Image (cartoon, rainbow, N blue to C red; front, side, top):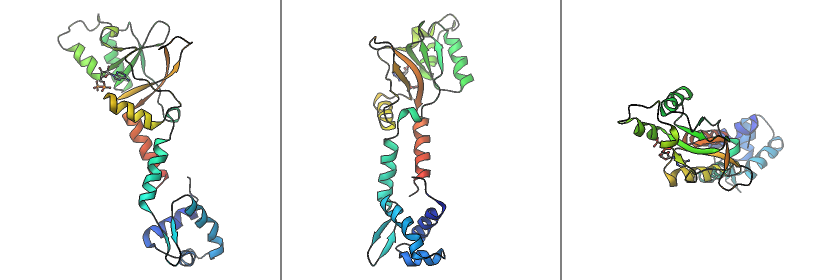
Amino acid sequence: MKLSKRQEEILEIVKQEGPITGKQIADKLSLTRATLRPDLAILTMAGSLDARPRVGYFVNEERQMKMQAAEFTSQQVKDYKAHPIVIQKSASVYDAIVQLFLEDVGTLYALDEEGLLAGVISRKDLLRAAIGNKNLEGLPVSVIMTRMPNIVTIFPEETLFDAANKMINNQIDSLPVVQKADNVENTYKVIGRITKTTIARAYLEIAEMNPV
Ligand code: ADP
């Protein structure tokens, strides 16, 4: 919820001085109790403030944290996904390493001749291939990548909670965001990526917008 300036001021006063009565808050802001009433109602309904008769307004931090968590887990992947960094599966391991550095990412998605998802290449895949292998320019990434149907994917309508779950459960750092391709089972177009950094950044954004 985006708060108005006055609502933010009220929240700050309650945080510092709660429990505090509506009248006392009004006095501090040099406003009347009646002017403040709609803002207090909104903040109470939204769960930012709690009110108890004869005690006043106070901040329920536990409830705020639960709301933050709920807001975070319900966000959809499509609103947070980043641009996918792709490479042709016929490209060499050498080219993949160069692209990984140029694009400053940890994972590349390999595409087949039709532009559909064929594989995932991570930092460790490239390091493993580089150990004891002198001809990295002659080695196609298709030989070392994790292939379909073993790729863990995510759809744009799934949530950040689903994404975090899949990454942790499968011990991977990123997920290709995909769209089904023309009715053939297990064929996907790559339309984005979600990484552990995406999840951490989304969490911070949501925490900043819903301050405890
Ligand atoms: P790192 O190389 O830094 O450990 P990951 O933990 O993401 O990166 O990758 C570990 C292994 O899992 C690699 O072999 C990689 O190919 C594979 N992998 C990465 N992402 C996925 C994914 N979305 N689905 C299936 N396998 C993946």
